Every structure is written in structure tokens, then in C-alpha cells.
Image (cartoon, rainbow, N blue to C red):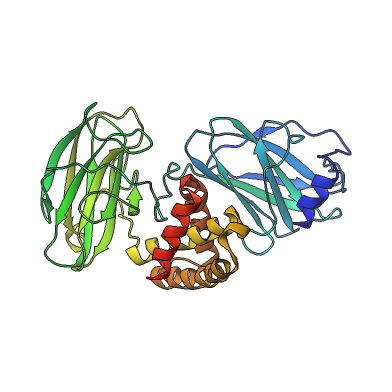
Length: 366
């Protein structure tokens, strides 16, 4: 925070030496570098290196700067030059003294500035870009909060051990992002782990599971390529207390063609083409509610009111604890917060203040 304030008060970045040629970063290919006496410097005297990343619209990228020699600091923002304004900065977001920023892909080139926190620090570092993760609907390993989707009346139920062949056409119902989908209520007589697989040779599939039989409300979880290639697969824990539905969907608005959707017991899925992902519905609900509380506080403290604000602060702690317990041992508290921030930034920002308040009241009763 102090570092960000310093840069803002300085009126932007001023350089003490000319920057080296910018290097383009590639997802999954780490870049190793060293800060030394000849490194270009920011106005505070700290060494830096400038990189660029070409983003894809609708996808997210996680950038980590790690070093055992110095306290890392990252800056990033739209535009190819490190003299551009940083819309994202981080000091210790990757744990310890390492840094992490998450870039929302918008189709443009972003600059990434690897930096030390202190002026006299130096030594080797590694810069890594991971992603793209799931499109802006949600990451694969995080719950999804999507706007209410239209239902598909008259669709036959899908039973355990069964499959159905369908098609996405120009007449198919649409999600708010314009992508076509078909909704299938599930006929489950008992609880347990259930695996759903969506395959198509015609389009890049996207699969989501909902509470209730109409593919409405917040998705409990979703997947893009979990079945390998461009096919989708997810595993969820069903209970006998509620119904579920699956939305067979295209990743993009242009996706059309035939698909096959199958449903099976997770413990009978030997030979699956890729490991299925499992996210408990309790985790989805807790992270969704945590994101909602965070969004409300960020939205407007005055409109929320002191009583609601106190409740939000208490509920944030409770929802984080619930999410960690539901996902243990796969998620840490910091990872839960990261998931909630992503859910909030990518989906709940589309909701009105009144909708956020209503949703939080529902969360508070869980």
C-alpha cells in the first residue's frame, strides 16, 4: 500500500536509467532474471525489469514473481510500456516475500514490471505466467456466481448411468453472455459423488451444475476442459435433499452443433480421459457468500449502514472458515480469499446494490 501511494504521489514512474528491451512472456514458460548494478531503476532507486503479455479476452492470467534473494514487488497494467500506469500491484500475494497479480484478459497487451520492494535489493528471480484459466464466468476450481439463466421447459431428465444426445442451435436458449445451452434436470434417487461429462466434436464445451431442476441461480461448479481437449467433465457431491440440473453449454457465443452428455457414479469411472474435478457445494456457497460480503463493503459503506457493515465483517470471517473446512486440505485461507475475489470481480459486480443486499441476507441464514 505504501509503495502504491509513493508511486501515485510521484506522478507516475520516473526512470533513473533506460529500460532494457521488453521481453514477451508466454504462459507456462518461466523467465529467469537477475537484478544487479546495471539494472534500470525506478525513481525510488529500486531495480526493475519490464515484460509484456498478450492477453485473450475473457480469460485470466496469474503472474508470480519469486525470489529467495529479495522482497519481490509486481506492477501490471494495460499498455506495452512500463511507463504506463499500473492498475495492479502486489507485494506478498504469492506467500512469504513473493508477489502475485491476476490479470483479467481484455484482448490487449499488458505490461508487467518485476521489481524489488527496497532500493538496495538485488539478486536472481523467476517470473511465471499461468493460465489462461477458466473464462470470466469462473475458474475451474472456484465456485461460480452467474446471473439467472432462462430455463428449458420440457427437457427430459438424465438418470445415473445414462446419456443423452442433443444439439446447440440458433433456437437454443441463451445465457446472459450470449452462449447457447440446454438444461437437463437430473433424476437421482440417492446421494453420493456423481460425474458428468459433456463431449462435442463441433464446439468447445462448457458444463455447469445447478441446485434445482431449471439451471437457474448460482452454479455450484463448472468446467471447461476437464475431460481433455475441449470436452468438459465435473464431479460433485449430490445429496438426497435437493434436486440438480446440468447446463450443456458452449464456451463461446458462436458454439453450435451436436453434443453428448453422460452421467455416472464417480466411483465407477475407471479409465476416464482426465481426472475429474470435485468442488463441494458447501465450498461453492461459502465462497460465493464471502465474495458477496466483500463486494457489498467495497460497493458503498455508507449505503450498507453500520449494522449491516458489522454483520458483513462477521460473516466474511465465518464464510471463510466454512470454505476452508469444506475444501480441507486442498485450500488455504489465502486461496479461499483469492477465489472469492475472482468470483466477486468477475460476476457479482454485474449485480445491483439491492441484489447484493438480498443475496447477503440469504447467505446469513445458511
